Length: 305
Image (cartoon, rainbow, N blue to C red; front, side):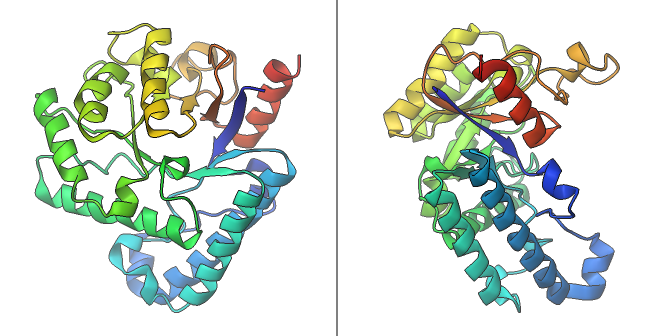
């Protein structure tokens, strides 16, 4: 097999058993119950994460994107001050060991509000803190300080000037902690006004050397400056140069296959076309809404023939 498949965040089967790793609270609750309650929820979340990773190993799943919501409101406190931090750290360490024992590749994909290219210094500072906090969580799990355990983001807005935004991204990359820099990847966008794989290669990889996560659905919707094949192989070059197995994202259009009323970028629940990897050895995060259930069906439909 040349493809290892993964999914993102929620495990549908375990969620039915009330095992989920993204328990949170609204801001008013956080203001009322404070860090002690955030600590309690974080401990529940990391225990659930451990169970998800165990489930993945049992079911032969080698790629998994963790939720960025393990620690509710973690931008408001230092996680090492949490009352339950010792227990949390122990569980995270165990979860990391279980993942690595099964050859499972773990990653994060922090939200779109993280923007190293922003002209707003306040946004940049918050982004740096957020990304560094993700890397600390990976360190607690004992994960590699490399893009084998990636923290994947988008460049963000172009603000009318792509070149200047890309320059800001590269300058602000240097402000990240070393363990974050070594894990950071960047992904092509799903809008024609933003960034293609080629633009990321020229404006990011060629300057700071971080690899590009090729997203198949985003390629269909983004700037059309390269063919699918050429964009895939251009992104692949960046992984070959850093010596880490390429990882990609794949989804189908919900608008095209399931519901014509939704926006073009919406991900489908299930899969209708396989990821084209041209026979290359890659890891692929499947971003459909039915999560591991769609992954299992994908394996049956496309990999077991």
